[in-house]
Structure formats: C-alpha cells, structure tokens
Length: 73
Image (cartoon, rainbow, N blue to C red; front, side, top):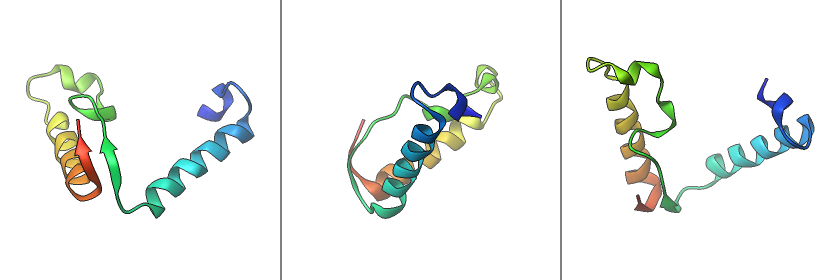
C-alpha cells in the first residue's frame, strides 16, 4: 500500500524497492552502516520499561553490522 504515496508513481516505487532489495541481496559488504539507537523497528511498545523489543532490534542490528559493515555509527 505504500506505493500509493510515492511522489512519482506506483511503478517508480516498485522499481526503487526492487533496486534496494537487489543491493541487499547481492552485496556481501558495506563500507558504512548508520542507525539510530534502536533502528526502524521502534513502536509504541518501546515506551514500556518491560518491553524487550529494543533488545531484539539491537541484537539484529549488531549482527548485521558485525558481518556486513566496515564502519558503524
């Protein structure tokens, strides 16, 4: 449903997504990896002290960074 909000067209959205997926699937290493403190997986559950979702997000990002990136920030 996100394609409906693309500023150019639905087709352009699909092409950009395919290009990004191709980059992630074909690449074996990235020079840089940037993220905020808990990535893009944040939701309202992160507002609760008992939420473990940020921990899962941190683990996933740390594994990706360790295996796939030269410099992380």
